[in-house]
Image (tube, rainbow, N blue to C red; front, side):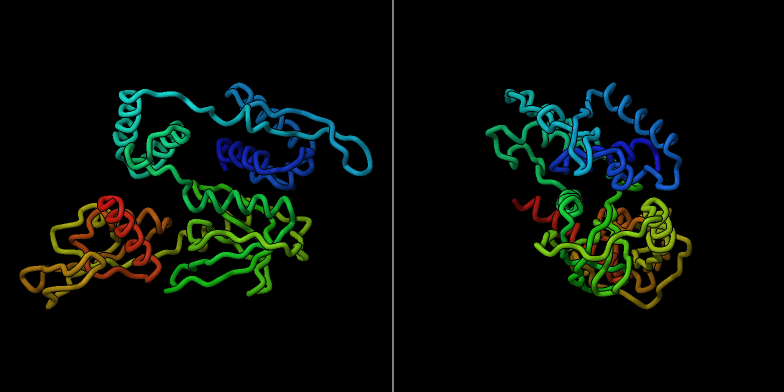
Length: 336
């Protein structure tokens, strides 16, 4: 894990805590602080992280907290000092801001730009549609915040989750242990009631809001639990094991062809139906089938959606559903 992701994990744990947290609590809750590290190594890393954040204008304050046995140092992040206050922008300034967010065409940057612009103007009177921005948090970030609260309160959570390769999501009941930001995605590790064992969940695959119940957790994470190792192993064996087959019109969908491991001719098929309607290829043998290995289902789904007019069938089903969701969301934005 790089330092930036560790800093973000630290900030989210502090922002979502209702009370000051001791060093031991931060060490056990923040992804990036290895449980096996020596006390001195952890102290050096924590002090270095605080210094870097302070130089960036984010001050982690030290307060006295009652642990039940004696007074100890606790750490808090004052939201009023952390979050950006509202800005009064005039019409031209707002138009420039909205246009700047559109300039970032790269799919990995566009969401960041639009979200940042949205946060700046979210307290303004002008409607979101007038700016052309989506001011809501991405589902996985909203989910991460809800789960952080459940971890702090020791409460069981419920959500609908789509396992890769399955056609439909299933409701999962989980005792949350820890949340980690890794590789640009949020992950939850906890005790899954359905499987009766420790499980890892990628929050990008949640298909519903997270419900925090009043039920307290009864299964606690092991003493030697290391979320970095758990998520790293999961990503290598789950996120990196995707193999897609995508039917495309010959000579089209160049971005997908660049990612393909194999390209085979699909002869004798003149017309197929995709999520966007009927797609014709003439002559009858003008289809290719691409085999694409992928680590990030969402990114591949976006690439497919950008050339959907030249795409036929898509497998596996979870990838196809992700493409449908993106295409429909795009259509809804243009129609609204």
